[in-house]
Structure formats: structure tokens, C-alpha cells
Length: 389
Image (cartoon, rainbow, N blue to C red; front, side, top):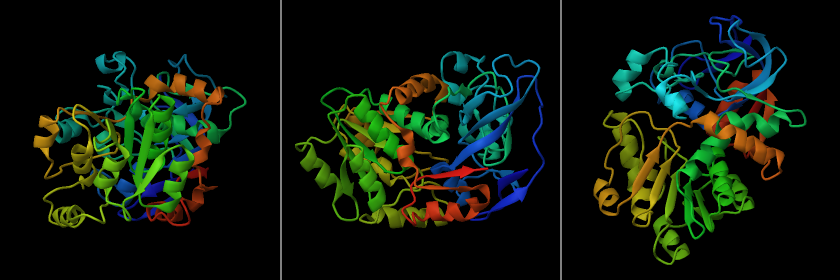
């Protein structure tokens, strides 16, 4: 089969690789009908996440048709159309029983390695480094789905791939980020980063009843999409963020803040950006935490900071004094996708939201390597890429 494979920094290739097969009775094999390039994939493309090996199949945002089912899998049958969560969960361990699917205790095949990196292992992830299990990803014609009787969401007739594909990652990620904010009717929610996750965080915050949502970015197409979704926008290349936030909140700051950027933040108006890049170059830190710093300083006392943006290692110069003395709450984590998908599918069916709004580019799998660069460089108005194997 064909698949997009990692061969080093900025080197993604459309290769021919062996077809996957059933390895466990709970498995299923999926014929992929749609997959997407996620912002998290760019961390691998840019070589800032450790644990990748030559030939690893990329991609954790995919859906398709079940073509084979393991003997112990009673939840799926051949012909079912499903969206697969990017987090692999067994459904049986203590964390899964609590609904904490992204920290499943069983699904990471490289648990000892992850224990060393994170203190305790997280769940396995598709197409996302050997720290998270080294599972082949879904930017391919076929994919093996382990624990396929837990997690995959059956899709009813009448909904297109484009409407439901993002239930596997960015829609529930944006939703969980907003839910973590405990939004109240008078709240101002500020979202740093108007990429795909940020776009869903904006719309989720409004669906959850925020009075005002503010989006911070510098890419015109992203800011326009955020405004179309109901956000007030700040172009951080053109306006001082903290001063503008003060103006929009009567000097008090937003009650809730969401970091939808993560480890590769830019800050063209700040010395932070230059210093962080220098520290990365000499390995004094691995991630650029400008957004974290800015959120801590901007947030109203007793507010909440929600961090769906991916971080992979170490950061420096975090204003812990401000975080502690202002009484801020910090909530983070990979998304517990199955916790949210039934409700979000209902909202799509009810017409509350059509997630396809975020798609700007659609192409064949063979065009994937070039579109990684287009997406990373934000060229051609690219916000979200969908691939059709």
C-alpha cells in the first residue's frame, strides 16, 4: 500500500509499505477514505519531537471503512464506517474507566521509554513517535486499529467524510480545551493561535456560552476564519497583545485563556522569541513557551489556563510567581477523544456546527509531502489539509 513516511527533518515521502494485518483479536483493519495533516504532525516534520525512525508511517487523524475484524471484536463488523480517535485506549484500565483515555495505562507499547520521558507513560498514539508506542499512522491506504472495540465512532448515513473526519482529533481537542475553562455566561475567553485547533476552540467556547471570544494570530486567513466564527481578532504583528486585551476587557484581562499553539510559538514583537530560539539551538530548552508566559500575565486573577497545544520537553522562564499569586488554574493534556465524540456527533447532525468549514486544501495522498510544506509555511491560504488515499 501507499503511505506517507518520515525519513528525517523536512523529509516526508509517499512510499510503498507492507499492508497491515490483524495482530490481536480486538484489532480491525481500516481502508482509509480520508485523513488529514495535523499541526502536531508539523512537530515531527520540523524534527522537534524525539523518537521518530526512518520509514515511520505518519498521521493520526483518519477515518474509513472496516475491511477486517479480529475474532474477539464484537463492536465492529466489515463495512462499518468509522472515525478513529488519535489516542489509543484499551477501555479496561483504571484511567480508561475514569474516562481519561489519553493516559490509558496499556496501549503504549514503549511504556518503559515513556516512563523515563514523562515520569509515567501516556497512551499510545497513531503515527507519533516511539515515545507513544511507534504505531503506524493513518496517512495511508490501510491502517491497523488496535483495541478497535473501544474508541472508533460509527458514522451514520447522510454525513460526509469532511463533516465528521475531525471528530478523531481537532474538534474534540478544541472542545475539551473550552470545556476545561468552565465557561460562564459573562466570560471572555482568549484563544492564542487560530490554526485548526484554535478555530474549533473558538466555536466551542461560543457554543458553551462565552460572552466574548478573542483570537490571537498573525495569519490573515486564520484571523478572517476566526472572525467568521464569531471571534474578535488581534493580529500580534500589528497590535501589542496585552494592551489590546486590557482594552477589550475593561482593564481586567480575560477570565479564561487557551493555548492552541504549543511548543513552536512565534512572538515577533517580543525578545522572547529570539531568546527561545537561541536556547533551543544550544539545548537549554526544547520548546518555545511564549504563549504560556503571555497567558499567565494576561489572565484575570482566579482565572483558568487551558493548554491543548502540544509540548514535548522542557521550557524556561515560566512566571510561576504570577501563576501562583494570581490563583490561576492550569489544565493540560492530550484529548480524551471518546469522552466527547457522541455529543459532538449529535451537534453536527443537529446543525449546530459543520466542521468542514476549516478545510482549505484537499488532495491525493501522493500530494502529501508537498502539502506538509505548504501547511507548515502557511502558504496559499492553507489552514487545514485533507488527503484522500
